[in-house]
Length: 320
Image (tube, rainbow, N blue to C red; front, side):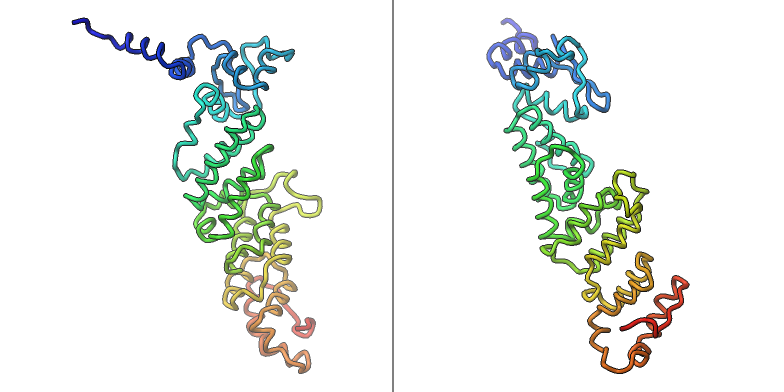
């Protein structure tokens, strides 16, 4: 009886099934004639004819009038892990990373970049595949909502449907989507995305949690010049403006006003007094009595709260 070797089996399989033969070319790198270079310097080997057959963009890039058409090393404007996924899709119609179910916030930029790359290389099916995977991950792991939202905000060409999924997750389950998330993912938000969250009336959550989100964001690293506008050049100034503009102090408990809001140092003395003024509990006690008489019952509370910052306040100077 003739023994069948593994080499013979491989030959028979490759001969019988074209997709496996193509996949074998991808995995082995045999006969590859082009290397794609990612923005991070990572190299991905491929076959020009396969890439060109799958994408008109690759066809122009590798066989057109571009200088890259004659080069063995072709720079492409995406990171290596995204290029690996694109090339894998060209050979197999699949992307391995989109078959994993793992709560990994650090993978979110890659998935969002994949949706952008799919659009760039004119792979509508792959773009839809990446979006569906992102939304599935958000539904499975709520804590990925904010990292995905951050990635969509930063990556040009990302699919807006991913943003919609992330926003919907935050609106329906704020606690599950944000509370417990590592601070680095919160401080990575742009101030425009942060504002879109704290100003969203469809998010039903205790107002103090929105305040704490802004406070946590304000404690992040110094912002790059491009991230801050001309009039607000640091996180604390931006955070203070967002708090004054969007946080409803009348919905925050008195104890939280004293222990969290006042202690944050994000409000000036005047702003803090206005916060107390807007609070239902305090406002309900205000009568038409003379100003000094109205102010005195709350003076000890205000004074003890504001004393934390070493700031003196003249009760009669403010109209409660």
